[in-house]
Amino acid sequence: MTETNRDRLVWVEIPATNLNRAKGFYEAVLQTALVENNDGPQTMQMIPCADGEMCGHLYEGKPATAGDGVTVHLSAAGELADAMERVKASGGEVISEVISIPSGAFFYAKDIEGNSLGIFKYSD
Image 1 (cartoon, rainbow, N blue to C red):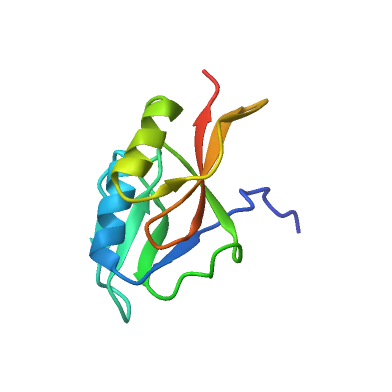
Image 2: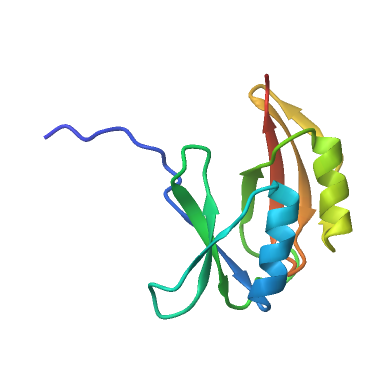
C-alpha cells in the first residue's frame, strides 16, 4: 500500500487561561477572525488557514511556563514590522529581531499567555 505524502504538521492547540482575551490577541496579530466552535467538551476558538480550512485552535488550559513548551509558527498578513507592533499593542512580547530564512522571514514572540510564537511571512 502506498501512503500519500501529507503535511507533517496536522493541528495545533494553544492553551489560554482567558480564552476571550487570547482570541482578541490572535485576531489582532493575525488580522483574521477566529471561529468559535462548541462541538466538543469545551469552547474552542478555531484558527483558519489560507485555504479556508481550520489548522488549529485556542482552548481553556494552562500554558507552559516561560522557556518550556513548543514554539508555534503562524503566518501573519502584511509586513513583519507591522505584526511586531500588533503583538506589542495586543499585550504580547516581541523576543527577537526579524530572522531571514530561504522561504521567508519570522520573529519570535510570546502571546499574552506566555506561549512561544514565531510570526512568519513567506517570501514574495
